[in-house]
Image 1: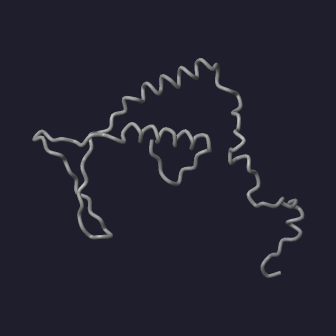
Image 2: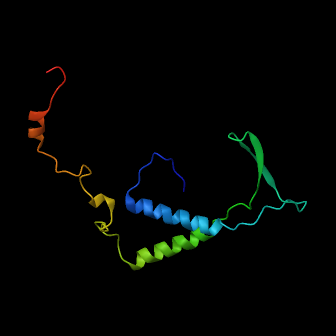
Image 3: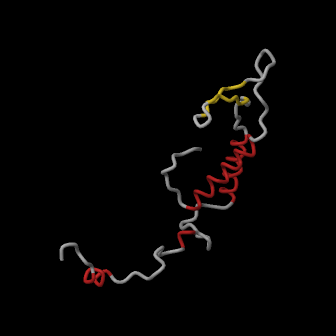
Length: 122
């Protein structure tokens, strides 16, 4: 579910990952505190480098992913009811890949750029 910062996704995949992260957050947002066998809350210590002191944080009950199989069933059912996979994906009008040239001006032809290029030492 989690991936390094330097990994690029296409916009539809990025949107799907954001939706999955939102589902995960909503499902695990209000987890109860972890209670030990002695009926006490469990804490963990965290050290703050900036303030150079320790603080405590309540340990929560471990995450359960019981919603994932149902989510997979819904996705598979929707895919099977809709027929085979499409040959070519449809792009939404707001997709950033439709923006085209990022320079804001039309690029001149390559031969013209070769003629006008200034080289160091000439």
